[in-house]
Length: 639
Image (tube, rainbow, N blue to C red; front, side):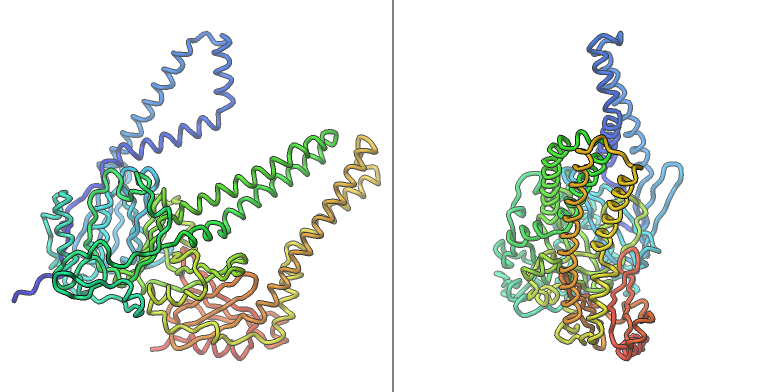
């Protein structure tokens, strides 16, 4: 019996493919809208004065003529942008060669960015709100090398094309690894643009690959995701039967946890949009998958740090501004205070609510899955992002608890990864988020960490656990109290600064250098100074007590542990951080000590990895010096 070729693709080798034509008319509209919005915002006063002058007859011109000129100017601007993007589209293409993927762009300055298939690490999709409506997305191809290597961004591809591109890249990577790059078979029928043809060929490829090995999962996960084929009786996981290729029944596999945002209808809930096309299933089967429940999504939104931080920043800015106004305009102090108080409260609450909605939409329709050797995460109700990482590229597993999450027993789980710097769209907002790692669950009970990690990354199942950590010595407690409550206590130093500042003001007033309009004004400022000092002192005391409690928890429960393959660094406190790092991913292992530590025979353990666009460091302060020496010996390269 003739053996079928396992390397079957839907892109012809050496052929130049164009991005979707929506790049010509959608991208310019977005660019013009942003330009017009900025122009109107910056010149709001001038536009208002022009409108008033026209209305009062100060300018001898017809309002209709002015409006007509404005519309004509906008049309010319749109036309110029469309021409510019059309020229960019004409010179933009991508090519699948035998050993590498290439992306060509540039109107005057020509650019070619290429990625060898052997270096492809992840292929991600990102779609803004406008792109989602049209069913297109930007494909981001990351390769090994971190910040020293530039990733490739291919804009405005149909979702069906993006899915086929991801499958094609990983298939060609496997062909190169097997030395069979020249044996890739081209499916012409699947490349004709027919949705039915694409679906049929992609399903056939998926059935041929259904027997490919996948990562092991727990027995409970297998039972939950498995289904029995009604045609041949074979037990399967994923969307197709490995025996006869029959698609899984609608009721199987078992339903994943879902929330209200997962069932959003209409264009907002439709991931494929207008031009998205049919789904291409030319992928390896999914071995583990989960989402977020209503309970988890709600608690993720409420406990997220971003809305609280932004709201507090806005409130503090208003308070500082009010204090400066009071110093300059003392007669209107009471009136300004009465007006400012509701503004401070209202704006802070509004910003917090908007932040909550942003977080909720960001994690709406969240999905995490294990597909072959890759971990994939999709999230976003309005703007949509699909990110993936090969298990061999995972630098660390991070389990973090904020203060609120620790109180209720929940945590966030993320994967440290190397991110390539983008060649296209260098200012993409997602680049900053990527340095934080890939969040595989934003809000999960701490006792479910083993279940989540075991399903998505079973290779980490033999990692050390917290109960195995070597505790810190007793001197670490005293040093932690001094470090957290005095030397690095920002609240204490702010209180000192405020006290000195108001002391200088009072001294200048007593010396006659700073004069007030009246005795009443001086009394009012004195009351304000005393009240602010009392408030700052109370806040400082509360924060210092909290930091002291954190020092106690840190000294009692923090620690480190390692086995043959993994290092565990655990820092406890009001918030907690747990890092699990494979030994072979540690770029630099070191210990350091200051004179105070050397007097107590203590060192600081450090493990530097290449996660993110910059290297990141996991460290633990004040471990015994002999334990630090053992760590350095453990981290030495081995055969």
